[in-house]
Image 1: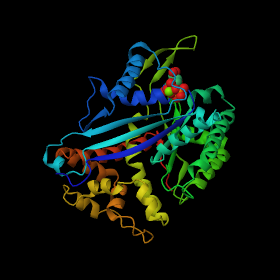
Image 2: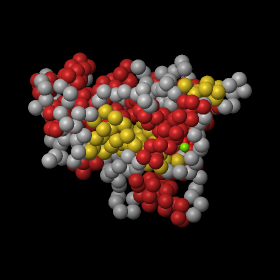
Image 3: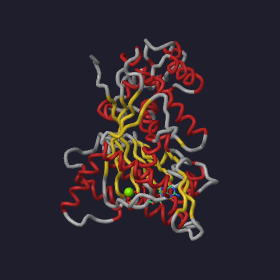
Length: 396
Ligand SMILES: Nc1nc2c(ncn2[C@@H]2O[C@H](COP(=O)(O)OP(=O)(O)OP(=O)(O)O)[C@@H](O)[C@H]2O)c(=O)[nH]1
Ligand SMILES: [Mg+2]
């Protein structure tokens, strides 16, 4: 019946060294949505693989009820698949919508793979394959371990340098293999967000404090990483590395007097996790429009960057929408530099903001148009994240 695919897929790649909090992060992202008391009026989150979902929930319950953290998963590269299942598939708005599910593929990339050389040719091959599998991500999160920052207090540059350098060298080691078939990669994560994990260890910080520290102590190494990544990709100007920052905390860990094991893990105090879906789904769309206003981006790149962005945009600017077309016609006119490849709908959708966005969200909720409500909610969440100083979005 539906003319369109009914699932939209979005990938996000999470890079972090061993112990930086990757497993806890994904457990804490998923776990709360499975609790009996959880309610979300717009969508349900399900794990596509039941066993995988149960393991994540088990990790979460261990933290919530027994103050126990999951076992280390060193060296394991895992992809978790989640689906955001929109409510209201059977109502009028639901039947017309282009998709019912937003799938999130969460690629967990083990940091050891950057720290240590592969032990064999087979191992090296596996690393390349794994890296390839996450190239479809628009967004990559590069985790800075908050605990390590504390351990290196006063000389954070030592930790940051080693983190960024290991990572860059890891990429360099993969480079030749990655580029066997093409000169440069067209499909590649274009937004590299530097994220502080364990942000609960810095109660006085906001995202600006974190950004300032990274820039002050490691701007040069961030530049080196950026140029290494630029060398890999087609249209290297369309790449944000270290321009976006966010704070993440999977729970509030309260240390015992001895300071070794946490005595209590308050999983209700989480930071930034609710921004992950909005960041994965809406940030690429916004960025694509930003870039397109500034430069000419070849079609082949646009097609891989926020692919399906047109579908999202059409939802947000649908002529059939309830009063939405009037809203869109009120949006700022677009500058002369815009390439033809950028659809007006895409631009309008990306630029929705403030009261217009809130109005659209309220209307969509009222009309039980859960898709429009969800996407506008994600954009509102991004706005709120910036206001709350949990997120810095690149303005370039
Ligand atoms: N304070 C604080 N500590 C955290 C947080 N998340 C994780 N930790 C601590 O960091 C430890 C390691 O977290 P993991 O999620 O297992 O780390 P990982 O990145 O998966 O590590 P590997 O599996 O070895 O690659 C946990 O056991 C916690 O003690 C957080 O949000 N806040
Ligand atoms: Mg792990």
